[in-house]
Image (cartoon, rainbow, N blue to C red; front, side):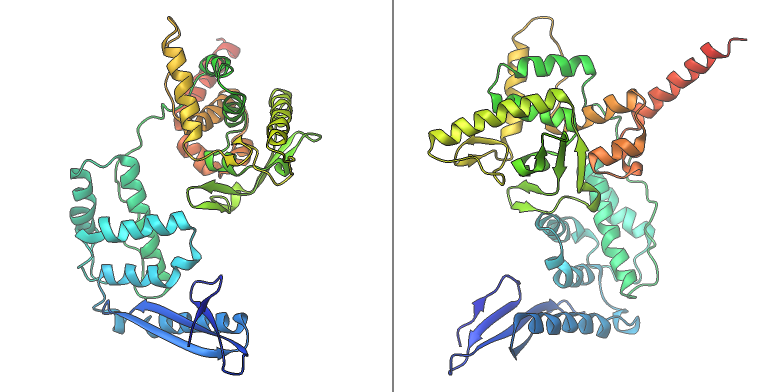
Length: 384
């Protein structure tokens, strides 16, 4: 019997001898001993019925494995593999790859410990310290720690362990944020970016004036640009793995933009129309905004390349020594400029597609500077 793939990872269809179409599922998973197993069922009249039955199976597998008694001997590695195999098809592709790498590479130093018995001190001594000794950055340490906590929280939700014993562990403090430009430095950068191509300048201007993530910029289409109301709608992201939903639910947003960016986007749109016409095509509303020619869209490296080219030109000019930042630094620049000019945190969070807590945590340096300014202002006003 020949099986045919469907858009759902574990659902297949096949044909009976009389030509009728049927569906089935094949589910691979790891049992509590770490052995790879498979469950399958066929004979469904439609894909939805097969999917419902598959979801019931997954729930049943978790229920059957969810008692404390049956998990007394399950190891950290066995649980994380079971968690991954059960839920990975619900995660974004980048999340899936990051968690798989975490399980296969970084979790190995504690994978043999029994999940139920792992202590905080064992976690610190056998997981945190070895990563620190390998020279990983604080950011990498924090990412690894958060992935571990996410998996442990899932084990608590499944009632495999009673609580998460690994909260509030110090893995190092973030260094003071330096990956941003002052308003004057940004002016210098954008002035010389005009010497690059129109697509290079427009992309760097858009990143600076909106605080968009690079992936959000790469996924922007012309129907997302509202020239009349002066807004940009951000509802997707794009990278090496294609187009998908934004990073978080907060990332879906519509933001106001000013006349400077609107006029540049008008000029750039006219350029895009002429470029496409030279290839015998018309500009469509669902076309990507940032393209290199009619058939080639910006890729993930293009913005980095354009920014690097601008810095190369600036390096040849005497007495124009400005800080070097990467593309994400333009997002930080947007946020710090707004913060330093008294824009409310909630407004900045809405523009960036973050929560207010993330903004406060990320830009703590700006809040420290603002507090110093507040003290000076109060002293100047109340002069005893």
